[in-house]
Length: 325
Image (tube, rainbow, N blue to C red; front, side, top):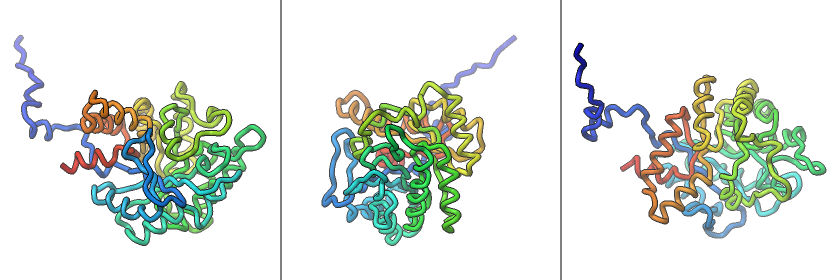
């Protein structure tokens, strides 16, 4: 019995053949670029733990978004840093809040040129820096839902396209959907941080956003990374509550959960490649240990290969410049 001369390397022998046979293609259309805007800031501010990512004053936001749109990145994710914090996070849902003002400025200047997404959480806005309201020594789930609803509606009034609750409060999608619908914003979508894990990879973000908790930790509401079945229950619950897009967060160490979500549910999936993933790559590249662009493309392609439809990533600009040639 004879066998054909099988050589899979024939399919890799030159660049054009390799391009024809690519099974997973990363595109700028897959990327969502985070932006940090800080109230009362006069000029751009660097943060050491997140090289090349800056806090922006409001006056620079439109120019920044224009530069992102020029890279053919279709969406941004806004995070706000207020001038003042209080126990209930008033600045998070104020009509004149920093995120609301940024949304309004972008919408007036760019109209539909880019999709505007915004974080819905309390950690940057409260004195305790937890994702929910504090009662005694506990994070109170149900009173937090009312505030999250206010935040989402205020962002919708400013012109947001997608609200993205990240507080990991039970019932947050249902509460926000009801609040948006009751206020006439039935077209505003919800991209929930459905399976947001308690992770040390968030540390650089906490530097950037001034949101490290003032007491205890977030283990009572963020997922343990040991429990994949529980993560799928969180995703399923958000779907039942009417979410439009689910999110797995972080991304790189949780590719199995992205893949499991893809195989289990017929819904758009976002993955958040978080600050620690970004900073690890930047630190190693600075030492000359890795090629920053090559590793960026490899990591983001792996996230898409696992099943993500879109990726929130601080690597967006690096990836877009590579993809655009």
